[in-house]
Amino acid sequence: MPVEIIIKIAALGVVIALLNQVLKHAGREEQAFFVTMAGIVVVLTWLLPYFVELFQSMQNLFGL
Image (tube, rainbow, N blue to C red; front, side, top):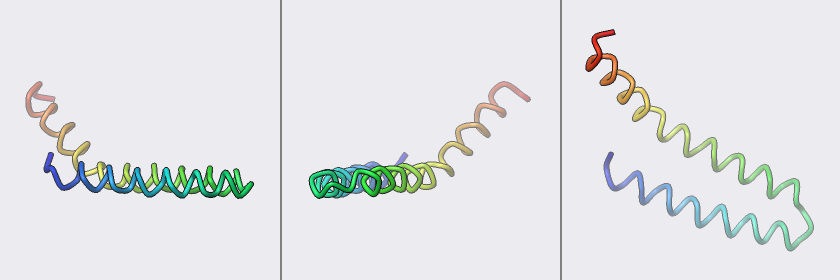
């Protein structure tokens, strides 16, 4: 896994955490929840190719 993806995930995590705190202090808990969920979805879409590669290498390893 390249280091760039880890840095991107960390940066997005910081931004999401800041937005979450700002929205919670403004009394908009629902929007804070949706911002957090959107961040999780973005990170999972970034990681999806790596999961596919992992499962393909496991299939090759076990001969399935």
